[in-house]
Image (cartoon, rainbow, N blue to C red; front, side):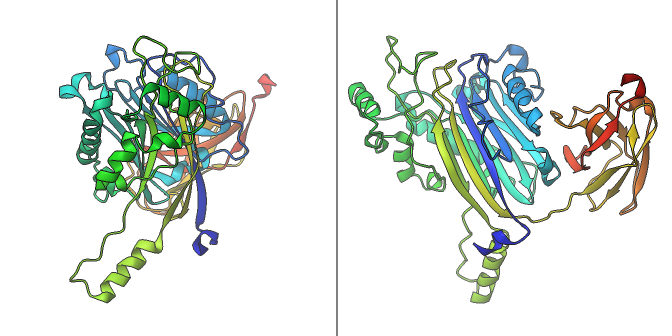
Length: 441
């Protein structure tokens, strides 16, 4: 519609992966999984894994820079200009968020949380991990779940999901819970099975490409008909083969003694926050004004792709990929802080930078400005940093950087202002050249 053509409208692409990796280590490269060769790269990558190999030391930890899957994704994406914004891990559940560098100052109020489900929270091996943030002022939440297994537990899966939705809380007044967000993406090994059909019928329907014969008995599709809160979640058509259960390193469904029936266990759904219904006592004037408020900053979500990637064989599940277009009108389009280098930066010489706070936010004496090599991996992946001073709006502050801190080899760099309270980079300079030291040339 019309407002997307205005200067403040934009279309962003989101690439979501869900994959139960069944404790395997990554042996394959991520090019196909992340569609790294696509003409139009996404703006956000969101990767949800289940059954990541969990050593006892890493019961629950955010310090996962070292797990091998995070490592593979970070190293694949950083050279392409994607920065890891945050991650959350609970046992085998792992959720990673990467953003194109230009979006970093507009991703704010990042919070992660987790919920254990399963038998008395047994080992916390099932449940959900989530990350929420504001994206150009729009509240978005991503939820990666691993729900109860086995054919006869469809009701328990629905209960677990409802429990996760009701108990996860964020320390943010306008979106204390998942369903308060404008857009929610829900994905994971949801473990819903195909009921009633025999193995032979399942296999012949899959082999003949008549997947639609199985949709009516998919437990999630069936449960959605009964449960109002599930109906708020949308899902594209299941036009890919069931992603569970395969013999490893093959495209053959389970040939073991268990002969597990194929199922669409791995799913990606989304929900746009429903409009509040006008209450009876509102007069007409009031209800029209709230409608306008509602529509001032609309968000449109379109699914562009929903498929699995059969080329990956380390697990007994195949990864599922969905790509979305998010059309939104930015609630704001200026960063909180402007930061820039002054003059030419050269190795072996003191350098100067300036920053000014454009909009009041909870700044802190623990905020810092980092010098980042273009292609940096995370906010903490700086070459050097300087602390910021207590500052008044909107004064331009100058800070000098000691020559001993300037990288001798030079190269392309950016400056980023990191807010400790917001846990994110709130301002980025344009990229600039640092001239190498003569002794290095």
